[in-house]
Figure (tube, rainbow, N blue to C red):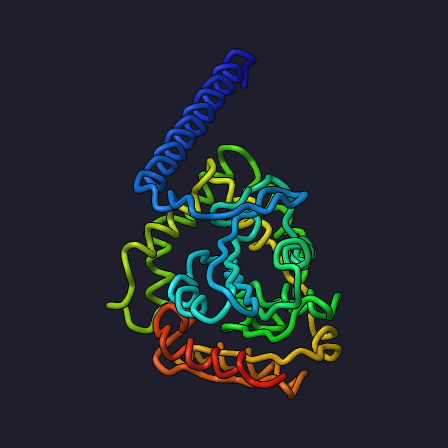
Length: 320
């Protein structure tokens, strides 16, 4: 190959690379516009906790003994129906975790201990007293770790479909660390994130994982999730990358044996994996109570809020 032909090839590949990256950038901008066009997150009736790693959005309603609602890392707006019912008898705090919802989304590595610290600080600085907690999905281990680290902040715990203990114990690998670095890149990483988190993939999650009855899925929930996942110039990709790369995983088996909290697990009975995962927790801590809600999957509190609320109220109102 002559020097002239080499230069031509380099020029071609440089132009091609520039064109591809330019196209990705345009697609990313289109995604950003489409996802936020409906302005589903415009409600301004929220308070803010100026935490040291970013501004945390939360909503306080009702009066009575405090209950903290902590969403799954994948779905922020899952407690709307539960919150309205609980607030009639309790002071309800509904938080948007860092990297989610209306809270800040800093570009750094998210870890399990980051959220343990956030939950601990929020209870101490905002709630100001020992509280009951209702937590969903992959956020459940953070609450159990917070209980183990400080027994003065959390009273009773209701977990909704907690994750499999074996899967949660897996640590980052070289491949997963490389994936994280790729997603963190400005244009290519954002483009890959958009391919994996879009309206179509969100709808598929609701159909196959979150809901048992497809007819109960609301367009508003899909649009809200879509907007939340691309808000603030798609900075949710940083949490997504850390989540997929196992930086939020933790082996919490050692925590379970030290807990003295009353713990209640609610599972969607239509997903056998939920039941198996709940049984794992009970094997390590036999005092845990498990309740299944029929014809629900990952989001029984969204799909059957009346039944969920009835079970939770009985558990929270039991004498200590």
